[in-house]
Amino acid sequence: MFKDHTYAQSRVTGAIFETMDESKCDTALMHIIHQRLLKSHVNELEYHALDKYLVAFFLSATNHDMLRALPWRHFVLFDEHVFRAEHLVDIGRNIRQIILGDLDSETFTRLIFFSLPYLKHNRLTLPPLHETKFCELQNCVRIIHASCLGMLQPGSKKPPWSMRVQFHIFTHQLLVSATHQDLHVFCRNHLAILRISLIEYVIFFVRRNMHMENDIFEKMFSMHKTSALQFDEMLCLINTFRIQAYDERLLDTVRLNDKAMITLERCNRMCTCKMNSIRVFTGTDAAAPGRQVEHASENLQFAFHLPKVGSRILLHLLQPEKSFKDVASVTEIQRSVSAHALPAPLYRKQLQTLNAMYKTHSLKAIYTTRCTVCLLCGLKHDMLDDKMRIQDDGSIFCSGCNSCTHVVTVNMLGVLLNIRGMTLFWCPCCSIVHKWLATGYDFSSCTYTRKASPTQHKECLLCKKRNSIDDVEVLESDLGFLCNLTLCYKHRPWDYQLKWVCDLDSLKLALQKKRNAKPLY
Image 1: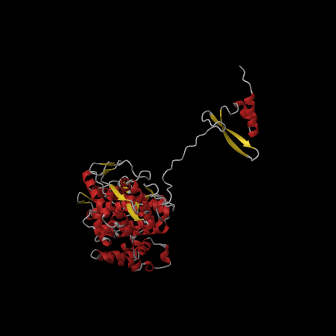
Image 2: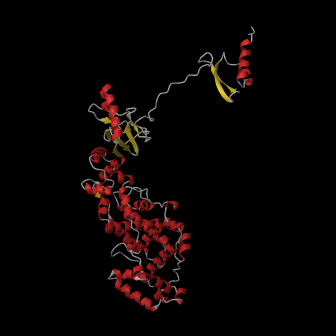
C-alpha cells in the first residue's frame, strides 16, 4: 500500500500498489505498452495516448478478480475519455478577480492568489472546511494530478510508467470515494504539492488563454521597473522537482510533499520583488513618500476628469500609458466618490431657499453649498470634518492626514454626493450639508438636525417654588390612575406621614394635620 500515513487518504483510496507486478500483466497488453513507450521518446502525443491503458494495465498487473468476468480490452478507455489538461477547471474568472482586487468573493480565488510566490507573506494555509466547496477541492486534486504527471508543460519530464499508473489509480479512487472532509484533510497535509501545482497551472492557463491579463500581471508584480514574473525559471524548478520526486518504486505522497516543499522554497527565494498583498492593489510605496503624494494628486485630478469605468482592465486598455497601480488608484477613487443629479422639483426648492438666503446674507449663500471632504480620511461618524484649515493660498488642509492632496470641494447645489456608501445633500431646511435620510420629507422638514427644546423646570404645585421640591406618588381613586405631585418642603407631608399617604384624600388629611400642629418650644 502507498506510504501516506493520513487516515482519510488510506481509507478512501484502497489502492494496493505493492501487489502490482509487470510480470503478471497480459503479454499482448504489455507488448502494446512497450511499443508506445518507445515511440513516446520521439512523439509526446504517444505518451499521452498511453493513458487509456492505465486502468487495464493496473488490473492486469495486480491480477484483479474483475478480469475473470471481462478481458482487459473492455477496460481500455476511448480517446475522448482520456484525461487531458483541457479538462481542468477554467480559472479565468479567478484570475480577473485577482486583477480587480476581489479576493473576498470566492475561496478558490484566495487559494490561487496566496499560492503565488511574489507576496511578502506567502505561507499558504488552507481555509477551514466550512469555507471550502467540495467541487473546489476536487479541482485542486485534478490540478495536482495534471502537474505531477507533467501535462502542463510541453516537453516536460514525465514519471516512469509504473509510477504514472499508481498516481492515476490513486487520484481516481480519491475523487470517486473521498468525502468533502477527506479531500480537505488530503489538501491540508499536502499544501506544498498543491501550491507548486497551482503555480504551474496559473502559468499554463494565463499563457495559453489570457494574453492581455499576462501583460497586466507583468505590471502588477513589478517593483522599480523590475519584473517579478519569472515564469520560465519557476517552470524549470517545477520540472526539476518531477525528475527528483519519482526515484522510488512505490508512490509515497508524504515524501513527494517534502520534495515539493524544497522546490517551493526555491521559488520563493528566486522571486526577489516580493510585495505585500495590500500593496498589489493600493500601489503605496513607503520608500518614496514624496512621489506617492505627487502621484496621488495626479490620480485624483485624472479620476474626476475621466468617465467612470467600472473595470480596471478596461481602464488600463483605455489608458495604456498609465501603470497598473495608477489605474487601480483611479478606479478606487471613482468607486468611492460618485455624484448624482437631483430631480428638477427638488433642485428648484434648493434654488428658492438659496435665493431667499442671498437677499439677507450673500456671503453665506455663496459658501453654504460647498462641501469639502478628504477622500483619504472619509467621513467621521457620518459627518463632514468641520476642523479643516484654509491656508493663505486658498488650499484646504485636512485635520486628519494634515494634507491637502486628497481634499476635494464639491458644489452640492442639485447634487447627491455618495462617499463610500454615505449619501450627502444640501438641505434647504437647515442650510447645511448632511446625510440624505430618504424619508420622503427631506425638502419639507429636517429630521437630521437637532432642534433645541425648552427645558421644563420642575416647581411646586401650590407655591411654584423650584428648590427643596420632591415628588409624591398618590392614587386618583375617582379616575383610577397614579399621579406624581411635585411639592416643596412646606407643602409636603412630614416624612413619617408618607407611609400612610396613598391617595388624594389621605394626602389632604396629612397636610391638614401638619398645618394645625402647634410647634413645641
